[in-house]
Image 1 (cartoon, rainbow, N blue to C red):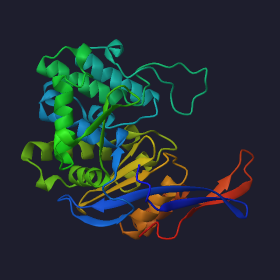
Image 2: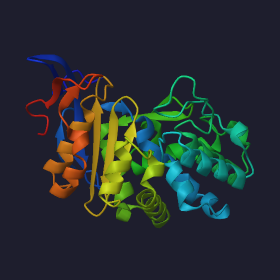
Image 3: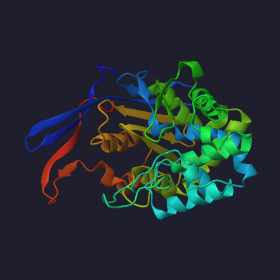
Length: 331
């Protein structure tokens, strides 16, 4: 944890500050150049699900997606932290049938749908990472590896994934820290600037080798065509950012208040990390950074206004405070 990071957001309750959240953000170009940053640009962060577009690259690069004739919906769910709605379950189930496997082969663990009650059923198709896991399994089937081992760090599948993450972010694979994600897949620790560089390259892959450039273009096109599959049909900021901008923004959240946005056609990638992992001020900060740097226009900002709303309300709808960007949070 970088202890020198500045306060980015402050939460007021009535007339007084109740909580503050420190963190860092960085805007990078695809060549790794930093455009602007606040806080420690190179602090190491576990990027969690924000790297799913990097982790999915072998699905196309190995030829697995084409061998199994996977549609763009399957590519979109491979990038997703989805809400576990029927549309998500149906696509993942179809992918598994196509590659000759089933829900029982998923090792992501059972999960209830987002916004569901405690009595809602939990299963592996509903896990928000099930699309990513179906993609891993497709690669395993294509290269002839035992599907039961697809999450092992030493498996060929995960070695391909690790190399894709490192190379896309401009790093050496041996320099990536490795932990276990909530879905049991390996998750990677890397510099925040590398994360921003990686998402800039996914959105603007001109500097990448032809095979990876094609994969990146196909994934961002799939997200643009199916933003609801990347996250959900309601109350999901990733979906709204992609939809409102007609896919110009490729947006992806990660657990513990990590967020990345790649800007197609603008050679720009943004990575944010709130140090304490709390998302309470993340959304407003994200929208304001995008607007200040002309990465969303006024009309788009108006459509995203709910995500930048500073007012905090209680369960009865009473206004109890506000979320405020701290001085210097925008650089």
